[in-house]
Image (cartoon, rainbow, N blue to C red; front, side):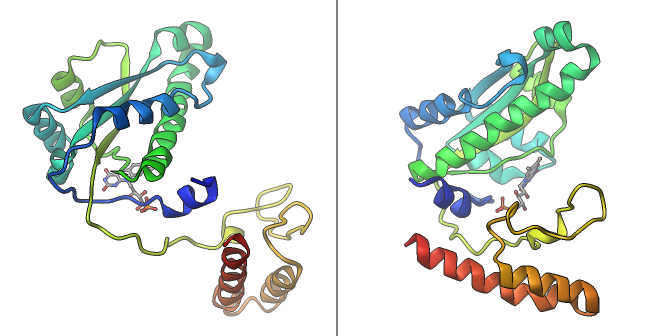
Length: 223
Ligand SMILES: Cc1cc2nc3c(=O)[nH]c(=O)nc-3n(C[C@H](O)[C@H](O)[C@H](O)COP(=O)(O)O)c2cc1C
């Protein structure tokens, strides 16, 4: 599947059917997880694949009672083994561990779309309780819990604020855009943004429709 499509179509489901996911698919998810970048290429990620019902339900309970998580065919728990990270990078190692495992988690989510299965990133959990259930060593940091299964939920359009609401140039607060740096944003919309800033009233609502048009156009160009 084309990368843009996988990114666009990925969404977080909150329910699963009873259909099982083949282990071959889970192993493909893990194959791409380990292609993610990692600090110093230390590859500190460790994956615990859980298909035992009691453990799945225990993890779901530890995920602040998100009991639907236990309905997944399997749960991939992504942990960082901090030993080498802390040896090389001291206290910064834990941050790298979280980042490495997050990159691996996103690869899992995107590959799941490609393979036609559903997966959700869960991080609201009691880490001590998940560690107890999985019997992970002391030096493991549990970063994400990823239930994988089939869902009947249908994709709906992503709710995201506009790119310009997150982006500054050269320094915080400078929202002036350059078309060459941001080819995704067309000239006419840059003008709209600038006009919006000038007028400042109704800024977001004014440019919202403009960006929607561009997205539609780009979608058509892709097809
Ligand atoms: C760090 C992180 C933690 C998350 N934790 C949970 C969670 O505990 N439960 C849940 O249902 N979704 C969780 N999500 C999924 C987000 O709710 C979801 O990504 C967000 O609402 C955007 O929706 P989308 O993924 O469908 O685009 C988490 C996502 C991230 C990145």
